Image 1 (tube, rainbow, N blue to C red):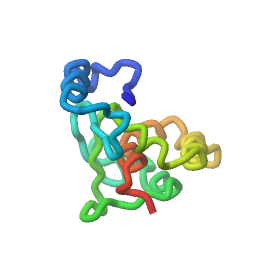
Image 2 (image 1 turned 135 degrees about the horizontal axis):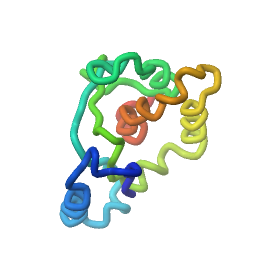
Image 3 (image 1 turned 60 degrees about the horizontal axis):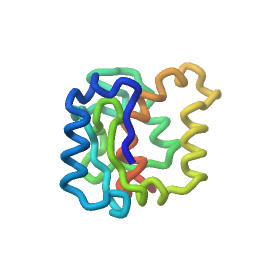
Image 4 (image 1 turned 120 degrees about the vertical axis):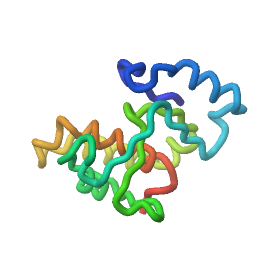
Length: 137
């Protein structure tokens, strides 16, 4: 599966080329188990969104999703701008409906109204952890 945003070229001008190169170098990605391939520019931030987006509520969302830090990466998150990636069906399906339903509830959490408009930016930083075996308790 390929996940891109409404205007993917802002974050990945060579989107089509990147997807083509990946698919040409892979045999039937949908059948492979552990594929998570970001598309675009790599960034990093701390659990508050610094240096580029300070005051993002990453830590509470991270906790509500039951994520853990990859070994050696306690305070830094690496992510791809725009949350654009290729991912195998296996990684999507391994979490199950209840996990994604909970993620939607976290995304639209009405208990913290000031968080809602920016939770998309938080999820942008967490998709790699949400979908891979790294990062789940």
